[in-house]
Length: 132
Image 1 (cartoon, rainbow, N blue to C red):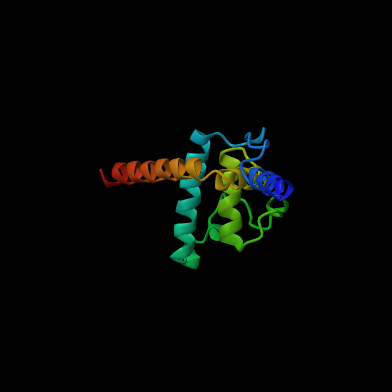
Image 2 (cartoon, rainbow, N blue to C red):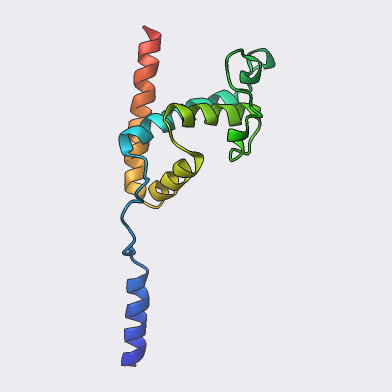
């Protein structure tokens, strides 16, 4: 009986936070991640309203072509690829670093909630500036 109790205790304790709970070395810092996520939210909003083809980023002069080989790790349509490419380029991050950071933040719900509260504040501030 004691062995069973000890085994159950060990199993339950192993379900807690792991020793590897420290952020990865390449984690995007919170202040930068807020700005990146604000841009991602704006991109996804634009995609969801289906931007007309005459203003589609592929048709705008001066922007990189969506078939650019550096977009190979972004597997969506042209507007998605180009939009994410521009966001990642602006903030000088890679898709894999973004994905790794998102995975870490998603496994830490308190930090993720704080992050998104700041994203909402950032977007609200931008909206108020645009309204002036």
